[in-house]
Length: 130
Image 1 (spheres, rainbow, N blue to C red):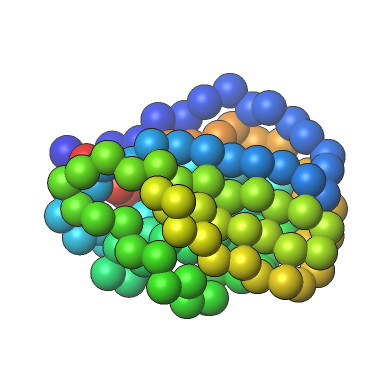
Image 2 (cartoon, one colour):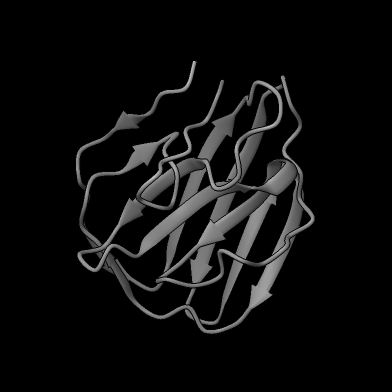
């Protein structure tokens, strides 16, 4: 089933945030399918998503979606995924493995509804299957 869930907007205005989720993808996901994302008023997303071949990726303040993290979310099993954003770095977690991007992560105001399972680009919206 391809579908997503929209959660209430939880506005925050910070350079430090932790996002966590459990993911159990059914097979290989469509590129750019979102795990947990929110957008700001300029339509820049922040959150976790699937890159090609179930590689875990993140998006922050209109940047970093293109980075190859080497973290592949296994199909058909539960995995813990997390994103910790700080002003000078972001750390992705997948079942205890990490990827660190040491770079500026400026303030982002995410004021729109959080979406679970929806893609990062609009349109089209690749949805997570699982």
